[in-house]
Every structure is written in structure tokens, then in C-alpha cells.
Length: 216
Ligand SMILES: Cc1cc2nc3c(=O)[nH]c(=O)nc-3n(C[C@H](O)[C@H](O)[C@H](O)COP(=O)(O)O)c2cc1C
Image (cartoon, rainbow, N blue to C red; front, side, top):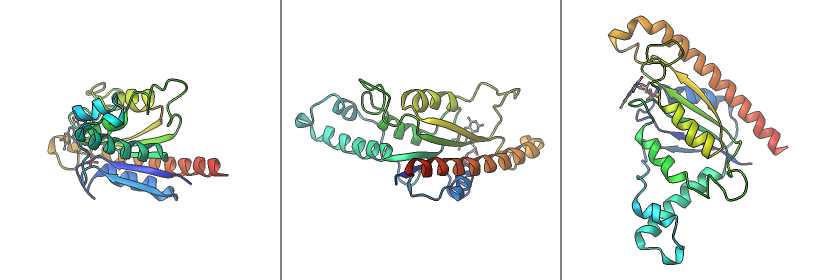
């Protein structure tokens, strides 16, 4: 049976809200997990050698291209070996943390993980949950509605290109307990957090069922 690839992109450790909500998913997921913590072990940014290696015969690699290609191979094989995905990606400066972008740039590869010459991308249709905590509120009707550029970006790169069956669980107003100006939103934050844990648990159970179904 294949594994769940679980990638954490929050810089915070146990106090991270996204990590704790991901924990509710994992309570329901009983299968094997491969865990990558991008705060503990950051992925290097994609270099010029990493890009040129994608277009070069391995027999002609420079030492820099060989090193960059080995890292991409490791990350792509880990990505493609998974049956399902769990990502914690909090909102940083209206987008994804740079740690996650670095990982994404290493695995989104034309003709290898997306835009295949014939047929869908190799990870097409696999279930993937993104847990994203954010200090403010970006839902319908909120003053900041439309300023969350993380979800639209991941829909382009991970859903449209990689073909993942992407689901999102968000926790809003996470700064309400600590920022006095947001204290009035504490109730909304607590409701959002409780809902996120429940949704994450349900996704974990659903993903596990699909995995069992595929194995049967
Ligand atoms: C570097 C940085 C940038 C942030 N930028 C935003 C932002 O643009 N919008 C927002 O609503 N919250 C922002 N926040 C707040 C985080 O999204 C919030 O604290 C979230 O709960 C972090 O997730 P975590 O608890 O899982 O680490 C930012 C936090 C950090 C550390």
C-alpha cells in the first residue's frame, strides 16, 4: 500500500494551528505517512543548474546539474510515490510561505509531473488536503475578501497543473487571541477552528476509505 505524503510549511512548531488541524486529519488516517517538515529541513531554491538539467541529457550534466537533478529526482519520486497528500500551508504575506514555494518549484516539471505528451499528469485525481491558517479573514463578505492569493495560486499549480484533487481547510482570524485589535473576532476564530478540526477529521476518514477501496 502506498503512503500519505505529509508536508509542513509553517515556520512554527507544535504551536502552529495548521499543524494541529493536520493532526485531526492524521487521527483518521491509519495508513503509512512520509513526513517532510520544510521548517526543520528547508528545500533549496531551484537554481539555474536545476532548470537546465531538465533540458539536458544526463550524460552531459555539469557537476552542478547532477547535484540539482538528484535533488529533483528525490523530491519527484517522493511526490509521485504517494497515494494522497496533506499539506500545511499558512498564509504569509498574502501567499504561500517561501519554504513551500521552493518545494513546489522543484516538483512542478513540464513533461514529468505536468503537461505530459500524452495523457493526464501522473498524480491526476489523487486526493490532497491543504490546511491553511491565517491571521485575518478572507471569506465571502469579509473586508479582505479576494486578497488571499494562496488558494488561487495552489489551484493553478497543484490542481490545474499537477492534477491533484485539491481540498482546502482554512482557519481564519488566528491572530484574534493575541492581537488586541482583533479581540472582537475571538468567537469567529474559535468557530472557524472547531469547524476546521471537524473538516480535517472527515477528510482523513474519506481519504482513508478511498485508499482502502483502491487497495481492495
Ligand atoms: C511572515 C508572516 C506573514 C504573515 N502574513 C499574513 C497575511 O498576509 N495575512 C494574514 O491573514 N495573516 C498573515 N500572517 C499570520 C499567519 O497567517 C497566522 O499566524 C497563521 O495562523 C500561521 O499559521 P500557523 O499557526 O499554522 O503557523 C503572517 C504570519 C507570518 C509569520
